[in-house]
Amino acid sequence: MATQLSNTFKLSALALSMVFALSACNGDDGATGPAGAAGQDGIDGVDGAPGADGASGADGASGADGADGADGNDGATGQATKTPGLTRIATVPDGAEVTGIFLNDEGDLFFNVQHPSDANTEVDGVNGKPINTGTVGVLRGVDFNNLPKSIIDSPVPKTDLERQTVMAALGEYQILGQTGDTYDGDLPEGLGLIYTIDGTTLVLENDMPDFNGYVSTGEGQGYLFSNWEELPGGMSRLAIEKDEFGSWSVTDSMMISFNDVWGTAANCFGSVSPWGTPLTSEEWVVDSSVDTTTDSDWNDPAEIASNARLGRMWDLVAPDAANPYNYGYIVEITDPIGDAPEPVKHLAMGRKENENSVVMPDSRTVYISQDDTGGVFFKFVADTAEDLSAGTLYGAKLTQDSGSTEPATTGFDVEWIELANGDNATIRAWIDEYNGISSAEYVEGQTNYLSVADVTAWANGDATYPTAENGGGPVTAGQPMDDRVAFLESRAAAKAKGATAEWRKLEGISINHDRALEAVGGVDVIADEVVENAYLYIGIADIDNTMTDGEGDVQLSARVKDCGGVYRAKLEANYDIARIEPVLMGGTYRSSLTGAERCDVNQLSQPDNVIVMKDGRILIGEDGFQENNTLWMYDPEAE
Image (cartoon, rainbow, N blue to C red):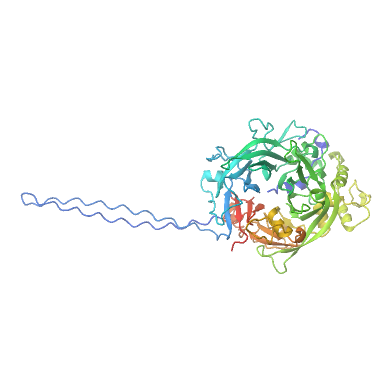
């Protein structure tokens, strides 16, 4: 951390509670089978022939006893009933979660191994190296766009080798890159490594690869973009090519430069837009307590000193005073296949803990998930197709099914509440008004940023911001009202306007572009199938806390709790969403047990990323407490 700590703006520990929130049961062995029956006694030897003198010969020796029969096989392992249509495609090594699931048009399935245990030492026969740091890879040798309907599960790992490597039901997991790889010197700064804005000082060796997005440049070749989710965050780009047997090679590598946008904060999941640009999500550096109770204290020196993780983030821009309103946005990578891909933070899409954004085939409508306790489901509609720099932001108001609290059967009607229309340039000018605020300006009990009173005044339609004496922030105190609240404190704004701010770990959201285009746009693009309905799928890692507290719009039972589940929403005309319903839930959470056994190993355990396949099946990556998290495939049409 810089020596000018007291003069360098940092984040509050209030935000830290969000930072550490980034992030089932084996059946009993069956009874041992009965021992096999003993073998038959050997046949007695034949008496010897009479001797020449008439005396009897000696008795022959008794035959040896027959060998015991083999022990019976153990009884089958007990386990919970498996959900029809749920298939274990792969497991990741000890300590890791499944991230970065991406399926390209040629059927190549990419996924990452995030933060595996550094104690893993086992080496598989494909890669020749252990998976004990952040790993980007692909299941080679299989076309996931042309899979059979029925697939045998990958086994639950048992041996050290199985626990410490990627086990797959199909194909072979090929490592494309690991934290620190330099590709024989072509990437001297190291894959996933984060440096200060001036490029002189290593800030972080990042072992947390998340989203993958593939941009094709021809058959069997393209660029793979991967997020690196930490504080500070980053994104890599690998040029990769596939040979005739499905094996990949890396031909070029780079870390995307975010210097012109003050770096990024925890690049989480993402997507690729219909026009071929990766969209990466900034998840952290947002204080969502600015709702009805607490003002932000980003520059409190006592909070700064206790937070080394965020100190790394703020040292990224030292000696300048950091501005928290520079972080928490959807970032588009423009010119993705050029020599210098250019990141653009789309301020008009709102500032929040973004998990993921997905653009509909109309190239205007975008759904955005907020990974938080008490999060909001957002929609953004761009003013112009293929231009996310200006548009209208909405928050979802949920109405739960009457008389129903069971997560597996309870759905929600959706109403969209308009927050504001804005554009990047206008919002950029508002953000710049908060530049240069240092710890020296902190006064206990006051805020230097937007306050609860400011949010309330905006939501009430007041003509001016409240004065400092009435709780207003000093930058806007007494000034004419504008819409900066909607874009700089989007969750607080949505809640104040009546949107539902009760989601708990609202994770990955996904559509299949072609299925959505056929079902809603009326374009026949799916071969050998008539697609009448298409859905946006939503992963929920934990169904607890604000979803089960008996208050507000969402009042579910805590049966599923941290086992989590997957919802889906049918895409209506104009790609609107009017209802959200459960499609797959984890098993019953068992709080009396500990560790992985709390959620059954043969059911979901904290689903995170969700990807929709062309045939309508979905892929689900776990971020749970299993010994080996699973990449699942699920068929929603299975009975």
